[in-house]
Length: 197
Image 1 (tube, rainbow, N blue to C red):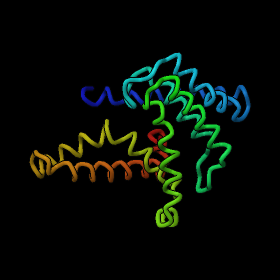
Image 2: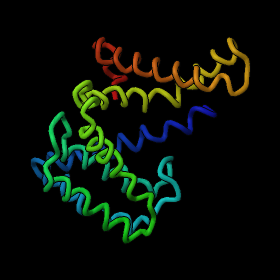
Image 3: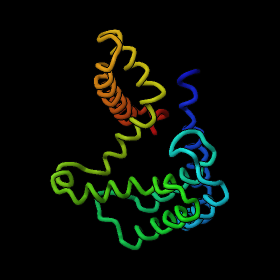
Image 4: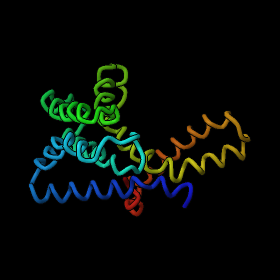
């Protein structure tokens, strides 16, 4: 599966995190377990240690993946302003984890919230786009781009344009377009539901 196989690490992490949280929600009814996972983020970082990188299959990233998934469930960002109490309840564990680990990597989990809040403050973006629709599109880009679409787009652009820096921009454009099309197709056609992320 090289070079594609190693990039599929997120599937088993995503499966483990999503199934574990779903089971906890069934056992504890509601979002209590989600808030417990969010509050335990600094403890998990202390136990696992700070990861060397903000991405990849490193087992030390598991607390960040759990926190990101749980905070997404708890905040349920739709096109509404975030409650200051909810935002503080999520950002306080991030600050504590940052202090415990002394690694800026632990603060990366706050980036999506910061970007969302920034975009909501830019009027021409906030009025022209539905920010929650970006999540649906980004799921396809995240899942499809590296393991499947990017190698295909690279082969196509190199065959058509040759090698060199000139192929970078068309490769990115083709990758993003194909990823969005594949993601939308999984929502459009029921028989592709198994490929929906």
